[in-house]
Amino acid sequence: MMSVPRPVLRGLILLASLLFPALSRAADTPVADTGNSAWILSSTALVLFMTLPGLALFYGGLVRSKNVLNVLMQCFSIACVSSLLWYLVGYSIAFAPGNGFAGGLDRALLLGMDKSTVSGTLPESVFVMFQMTFAIITPALIIGGIAERARFSAVMLFSAAWLLCVYAPVTHWVWGGGWLQQMGLLDFAGGTVVHITAGVASLVCALVVGNRHGFGHTAMPPHNMTMTVTGAGMLWVGWFGFNAGSALAANGDAGMAMLVTHLSAAAGAFTWLCIEWVRFGKPSALGAVTGMVAGLGTITPASGFVGPAAAVLIGVTAGFACFFATLWLKRVMSVDDSLDVFPVHGVGGVIGTLAVGIFASSGLGVFSGQGLREGVSIAGQLATQACGVAAVALYTAFMTWLLLKLISFLTPLRVTVEEETEGLDIVLHNERGYDL
Image: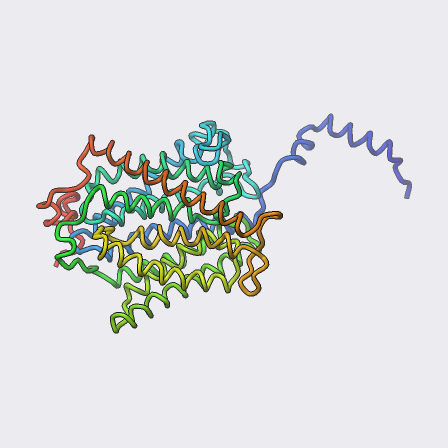
């Protein structure tokens, strides 16, 4: 067979590129990875499943029967409002090129995106939708702090403003090229972005709105623990998409994140119920599912960086710390964070974010993680993690307080005592959860 001289071959290739420029451009066009895309499509569905119906059922069972529809309605409506705002401008603030504080507006209305646009190894539409599910669940978590007394209109206004003024900028800080990411903060799936912001905001909301009428004097037990346990199971399963999906690929990082997520959840749940068993003589279903959420929230920032042994230790720590934080907030401080958002998500998020600075290190034997960046010590990474925790917590607290004060000029933040006594289902929605 006669070979083609190299100069002739190069000339033919150059001629082809001139005659068929589309072929040359196609060779340089990024192409989405089908395996990664399939996994993140599945993860997106799992994370949305966490809110609807997971969180809605979890929260709905924890309130009194006269307020169950109100909680379900809040979760459902927040999902709608957050989705539209994420499309309009939220995604752009979080992930478009900008400065260290926020992204620009050149991706508002998702301008420039079509089915061929790629983000990393994913279609950008998949990345947008995956991140949208995080933007849905974070403000939905906050309502647990003011359940059973907040006015629906105030919740909707606050959730919309908070998403744009707190969640989207903090997302940019940590994941969108902002100042904390540049500093080297490690937050795999949302310890700062989701759990610290939601936990701190919930505490501020509870303090500003005030306690439920009768709090500390009248028993306010969950009305349907079957509903709560069902929702908790959905949260556990959905959290695999939350954490393992944050690898943004179907790879070893995703597999390890899924494993450590499950181990931490199991350790947190078992630790909490054992503490109850020792202190009160009986373990409770409420304690088990709350400990599970504590374990899940605490492992979230660490899930892509730590190993199985560290995950178990983090889960046990979460069970202990969040249990006693719950008792302290309610019994000592007399703060009515109705569904324990701050002591579970806020405290858990802080512990998990700090734990990354230790257990991500590769020199800890059985507790070793994936390894810190070259030249970074445990002390240095811990300092970065602590800076991130403090910055996110302080910014969230101030902005949450400011937004609540501004919204109070437009509409009352809470219902009247009479309306609270009658129940928010009838007062705000003219419906009942149960017709008995």
